[in-house]
Image 1 (cartoon, helix red, strand yellow):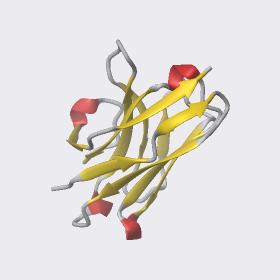
Image 2: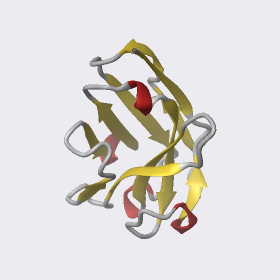
Image 3: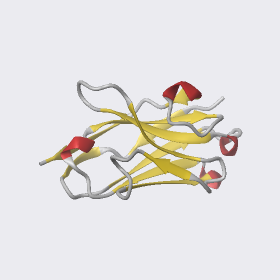
Image 4: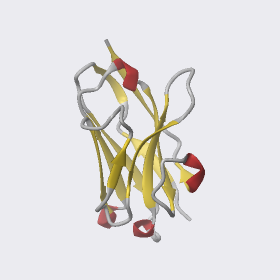
Length: 122
């Protein structure tokens, strides 16, 4: 069982960067794949990226590929989402999630954080 807490969101200008963090409870953290999702106003929650248990494999949504980077530090029980070259359309609540399988589908994730707000002005 994992508890997740996101942080690092804020209000920034287009072109700026933010580093989001997801702190997890320590037990068996390294045995979970970790995904990032986001929900923009008026839209359904969508996949952003995922990182494998060891951190050796990552996948990203086409909309963020080349701009966002997922990493994890299992010793610190923390997953990061580095968001560069932010655009107004990146404005959303960002969630981290823990699951057993590398997947783009939120149904494959068992544990979710409360989310952190990212707002990008034009």
